[in-house]
Image (cartoon, rainbow, N blue to C red; front, side, top):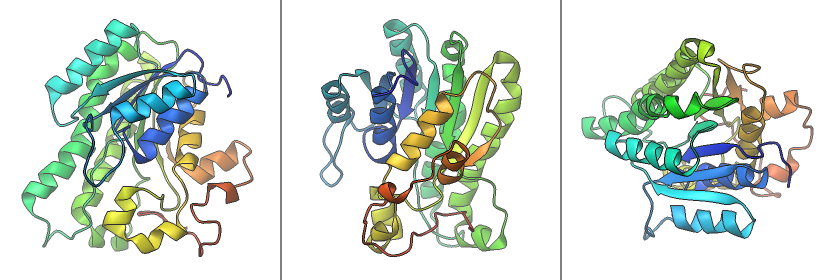
Length: 276
C-alpha cells in the first residue's frame, strides 16, 4: 500500500463494477477514503457487484469507504450524495466521472430514447455531477475532476460509425476542457482519461464482443493511471485528454505485460477513437 492519496476523499460514479470498482480499490489502497456511488445497490441478475460488495472489498483491505446509491440522471440523487459526503467528510478532493452508457449504432438505426439515455448518463452527468460537487471541491487543497472520456478524434472513420455515441463521449471531453479553463482560478484540475486498448469489462463483453476479451487489458491499468493523475499537485496537470498507457509511460512506467487480461491472448485491440 502506498500513501499517494492519503486522507483524500474521492468520489467515483459507476463504482459498483468494472473500471469504477478498480479505481475505488486502488485509491483506497493508496490511502483515500472512497465514496462508492452507483445505481447498483442490489444484486443484478446478470452483472456481479453492488456498491455494498465493493465497499466490503475496500474494508477488507483496511480502507475507509462510504457506499451511496446514485442515479446520475437524477439531480436530486446527485444532490443527496453531495450532502452525504459533506456530512461525513466535510469536503471532496476528487470527483471521478466514470458512470457511462454505450450503444454502438449509427444515426439511422439508434432509437431516440436510447440516445437520450446515453446522452444523459454520459454528457449531462459530467456537467451535473461537476456542478453539484463544486462547493465541496473548493474546500480541498488539491481538487480534481477526472472524466472517463476520449481524446477528440475527428476522423471520418470514427464519426461515421457510431455518431450518436461518439457525440456523447466527445461532449464529456469538451465539457472537461471547458471546465479546466473555467475552474482554473478555483484551483480545480480537470482532465479526461481513456484506455488506449480495450478493457476487459462487461461493456466490452456485451457491446463489442467476447472475442475482444482475450485482446484486452484489465481495469487495473486505468485505475493506476487515474490515481496518478489524482495525486498530481494543484494545477500541475489540467486541461489534458490522456490515454492510460501513454500517461503511465510519461510517469516512467515501462512494464505493461502484467495488465493483460489474457497472458496468452492475441495482439491487443485498440479502444474506440484510438488510431495507434
